[in-house]
Figure (cartoon, rainbow, N blue to C red):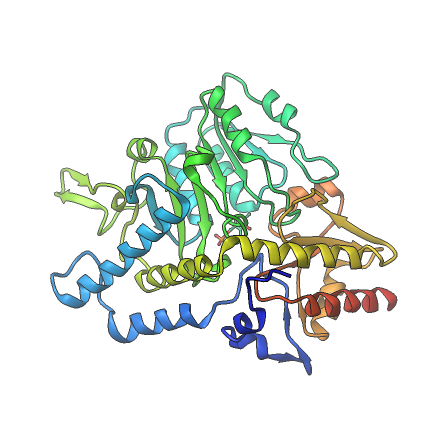
Length: 406
Ligand SMILES: *Cc1c(COP(=O)(O)O)cnc(C)c1O
């Protein structure tokens, strides 16, 4: 157990963790879908609504200036946290999905029939479908990096996929199903040797590891606040300035313009060119509090704690007859996807819920990956900083009990 963190004190910040489900203490193990939100973040939302609510970047009045300052303070916190070169490279979106759609749509405008995009077999649907939507307008083809039985990308196969037609690479930093941490720095370097830019889907990396976009040298990096103890409705697209300047705006409206006439409109400078309309400024401000919270706990401490939970859960689950764990990379992220015998993920999830345990079941927005493993769905337990070893023991005992019922 990490000596640095007082987990009881951390848990006290999450009222939901005192809930009971069917008379059992809630054990929340669906953190990879969304994490819970500590009081400090919710208090920031309340403070924004009660004391600082005014539209941003528009008014000269004091309250508008306060709201604007809080949004821009979060932008600087994000910039600093991911080590981006400039706040111009930090664009607020509704989430990872919108960030990827922004790039697919605007970068996609610059693609031609016959162009190719490389993705991996472990991508979330939100890093597959936006690229396919370009392909509906133009004949753009997805090339797919295969995944081994252990759940790792085959780097030789990856390099072999590059052709003269390769225009873009889009890949997950950490798999939401397998927990696999892809060697993205190396994969980005390979793409750059072929002159191809890379987008990293960082939705599962940001809650669990330090990310330095300058060190990775990625061209784009996308992530969501709600998976990192922050509010819903906010995400970030980091993009290298020269790409963002090259790309056309994504949506039109207020905030994103320079000068508008019916004949000709000019666009605002970065990052506002990509932020049409009133942003979710309340939640953006609160996302700043979530970043402060993570920094205060220390990402190294969070990761060490989650790693211990993962190791213990893995060890105990593997004692159950018929247990299959998908994704066995050493050093993987804090998710375990599994099946027991021929018990469907749905049945397992339903019965665990009766015992107060919240896990995810089904295809996890990664149907191609389910096909890769020849299954309909999986059960996934995923950990956050407020989970405890005691919860892990109760979870694995519950899986064992359910397995024994079939
Ligand atoms: C959750 C997730 C997404 C989508 O994030 P949203 O917040 O739903 O937009 C994309 N990729 C991965 C790997 C995810 O885990």
